Length: 106
Image 1 (cartoon, rainbow, N blue to C red):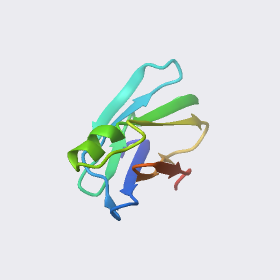
Image 2: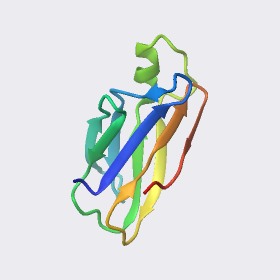
Image 3: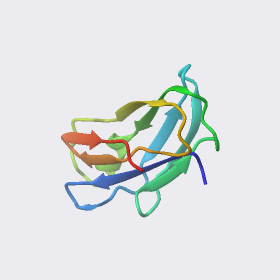
C-alpha cells in the first residue's frame, strides 16, 4: 500500500469523482507521482515512504467537470500539506463546481 491516499467525492452529484488526474509534488516542487482516481474516486500514489517536508497534491478538476458538461470555477485544486512522522497520509477532497474542502483523513 502506498504511503499516500486520496479520495474525491463530487458533492453536487453525490458520487465518487472518477478519472480525475492527480499529481503529487515534493518539497522541491518536483513531481513525485501521478495517477487517476478509480471508479470509487480513490487513488494511492507515491513512494512507500515520504520524507518529511511540504508536499502538494494537484487535482485536475476542470477536465472532470468538462467531461460532464458542467462549468466550473476551479480548473484545478492544489492542496498543500506537511509530512512529518506518520505511517500513512490520507488527503480527501470534497468537490463541487464552485467550492471544495479537504481535511486530514485517517
